[in-house]
Amino acid sequence: MSWDWFADPTYWTSRLVFQRLLAALYLVAFLVAVNQFRALLGERGLTPIPRFLAARGFRQAPSIFHWHYSDRFFAAVAWLGVVVSSALLLGIADLLPVWGYMLLWAVPWVLYLSIVNVGQIWYSFGWESLLLETGFLAIFLGPASVEPPVLTLWLLLWLLFRVEFGAGMIKMRGDPCWRDLTCLYYHHETQPMPGPLSWYFHQLPKPLHRIEVAANHATQLVVPFVLFAPQPAATVAAAIIIVTQCWLVASGNFAWLNVVTITIAVSAVDGSLIWSAPDDLAAPPMWFNGVVIGVTLLTVVLSYWPVRNLLGGTQLMNFSFNKYHLVNTYGAFGSVTRRRTEVIIEGAADTDDPEWREYEFKGKPGDPYRRPPQVAPYHLRLDWLLWFASLSPRYGSGWLPALVGKLLTGDRTTLKLVRHNPFPDEPPEVVRARLFHYRYTTRAERKETGAWWVREPIGTVVTPCRLSADGSAKPVR
Image (cartoon, rainbow, N blue to C red; front, top):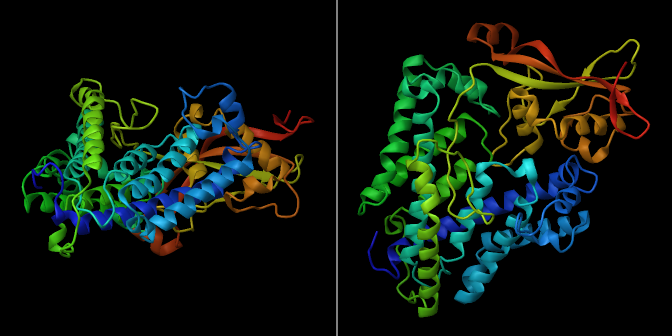
């Protein structure tokens, strides 16, 4: 990358692709909010936003919802995000002057920041902060009519370095299976949301799994340093990261984590290798260069905390050091579970002689004969939290009893998050949640039975409950 501190036209095409990909991801994120917020966060949701706002001020959770909240207003905010993201995807921002471009790109950042900061446990994933930090930097890339600002491109490289190197370091410091190259013996089976090809990845020979882990270490611990090398080395490094992330997309469902990483990596590619920039590009205005310099200095200051975290003995994973989700620390799978457990929710129409029928969710494993679907980059938040609840009761303590209560009342908003409702006519009289051990079928079992999973019950998460007079779930006595 050029050391011209102001602009470099060779990254014009890379910037264009980066912006379109990021706009598409914003669009997905806002559609997820539109479709899921009422059941999870609405006024009658599992963890209502009004209750959250009553306990926290603006400084603790910066959000426009501190000034006003209603489900209609939240829906309007989310739909506005959909509209603006669509406009950015169509390239409307490139038709505006620099200041207009900045204002338009700032809108989805402000809106999504407002959602994330009131989203509680449903928005506690690392890719929320990653999307916000990437979206913030996009504000300072400029429209297609001006040369790409070099300092902003360097800030994107620094972000990509933290994503990759942070993930590599958390693995080396965490589970021993990363150091002995055996983590992929388990990962494809125990990951939060397997995809349609995950079973096949799990069946790969163990020596190949070890090669996969070794290649992952090289990609996350060595390749990130090459991003700062002159071209074409930086493009090669970015290409390696993109290929690795595509491998992860194929092997599992991690919402938009991998696609955001691919998007950032695109910014490191020498765009002239794809398409030459127009000859009539304008130099960025001096005031814009001054703003970019200010953002760079802010990033340098805020980088103290993630750098200290990376170099310290106890590394935090996916953590924001400020409420605006700027210059965060990243990482994933510092530990890998060896056995898969799933929370299975069942209902029965008769308490005295229950015939238990299972609720099937859209993405998480349930029916052993159902092939895991492709979900990413869409994010099924309830399905993900049910995976966490299977690891420890504390992950579901604040919302799982409320979910049981919603099922007992046949709440239509909540049932929209379910793939199959076994009680379409009237709600069940009793609901329970059991814990099952799941494992993939072997090749022979798959051929013989057609099943993708073998499962067995191992415990109870929520004892059978019925609806109380106040509308909550109470244990059956």
